[in-house]
Length: 265
Ligand SMILES: NC(=O)c1ccc[n+]([C@@H]2O[C@H](COP(=O)([O-])OP(=O)(O)OC[C@H]3O[C@@H](n4cnc5c(N)ncnc54)[C@H](OP(=O)(O)O)[C@@H]3O)[C@@H](O)[C@H]2O)c1
Image (cartoon, rainbow, N blue to C red; front, side):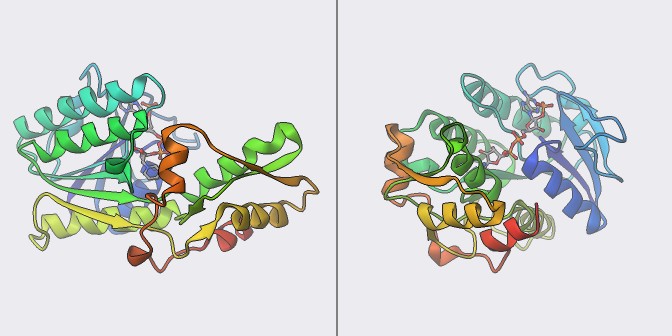
């Protein structure tokens, strides 16, 4: 059993990582700006919670104290992305190193390094902060989560539709499968089985067109809404149409999108 810090452990991926690490018998501390009440949704029984802010640095010393492996699943959108991913990551790695933490696992995105999209550039700055730090780091770049693909498709709702980005494929992955890989990576590093400063790519079990995924979503909801093809503009749309979000050679044997929808997750 080792002490694991899950930064952003109240978020979507972070909750799955926290649950997976506890299930495997680790001592898990979660850091986020808002700590949940015991009965609140993000709370995972067995984890302890510390209030910490990556950007200001407040609470980070308490969070990293006695930790063997940091798993970073933090996230931020819009203008906050650069702060959290660049400044926040720098604050975290420096504080962790000062407190004798030597290993980290970072959750990133497949194709982030091959895109002009601002959020992806911020993710690359976050990756760089880890790779340039004193911590031995494993970066896990994952494809789009099932939840995220669903959120894109459901953006058609105000138009009475399911949205389907044209000429786009996804390889959606369940956050539970991502969590398994992140905790595996943390354990491998701790046991000296992993090379330091590696980048792993993982994707969901199947590559499917956005249209096929939208059709599955439509079937699962039983809705009569139509499927609306939309060309996504900007660098993100271009990145996806170029297939830079796919890693078919690194598909996990995990939960398929249709099965995930059927499970009501
Ligand atoms: N969505 C996808 O399809 C996908 C695919 C591959 C990789 N990823 C990556 O996966 C990671 C996690 O995404 P997610 O959707 O699970 O995130 P999320 O649900 O938005 O959760 C974000 C977490 O970060 C914490 N956080 C935000 N700002 C913070 C700060 N300043 N200091 C400390 N904690 C902070 C949040 O808690 P508080 O707000 O309370 O602080 C929360 O716990 C992201 O880095 C994303 O790039 C996502």
